[in-house]
Length: 346
Figure 1 (cartoon, rainbow, N blue to C red):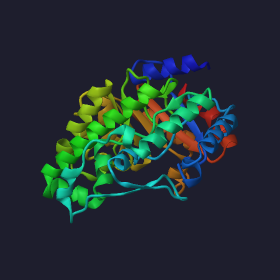
Figure 2: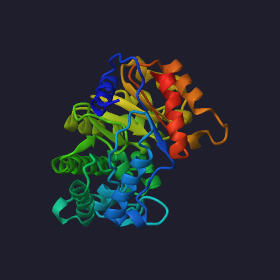
Figure 3: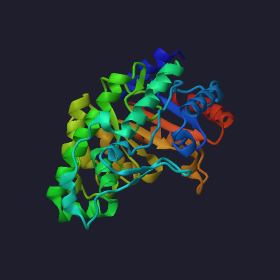
Figure 4: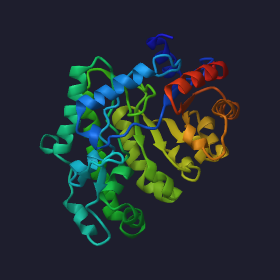
């Protein structure tokens, strides 16, 4: 299938039009992270991506060779003043500045000046390097939700507790990070001449559909708390980019009805094995597209068959406005899995 045909089908799926198929992506191996060796070496990062897509050249799915310019999801928090710590185990760590001992210090935080931010310069230098040294299109740098960015600046447990104990300070923090995120994304869009998708994951998202954000903090909030501290700020993100694709890991069943209140919500991106499917059905009922993830490691304990599991997802949710993201341990296994899924999902 040609790239433009893939993109056309994916766009129609986002818009919940009948396409007669379910777009799917099969990745190989574990997620590639911005570990120390890759975070500080643009050439090595580019080489990894070129090698990865060369290995996947025979995988017949809806993916397109592209580059994920990963520098971790903590760049906004780091630009706001947090220490950003590259390491050998995963994406850079963020050391928070606000704890329960210095809540008033939140009022000293303001939207960063991009030209003065070393972490922004490194991130944007990475974009420039890839644009200059490769012909592949680029994803966006990781985009956190306001809640995620705020819970990095403000120590996580203390931040969640502060939604009850210090709501005024939490709202101040969320306003600052929301405006910072909007500027961070706009700066990327101005810079990336070969944009592939409005997110940092491999599925194509056209600009007119909206922006994908990662909102993992949502899964630990009550519906009441999320309505106050999640919806208003995600609405601003949605308004700034013409729509929103919302992702959260974990069990989102309790908070999902409130997530559906976000104006301009175009899609949700969830990990299927972590959720009660009956609670996810609200998205289908309200006409919102769904990315249903299930990777090979999600089934390590029960040994579920990836093809059969995908088939059950489509049987349960229907084939309209649905995407499947899955994976196999190796490129050879990914190729075989993609062929099997083609027979099931098309």
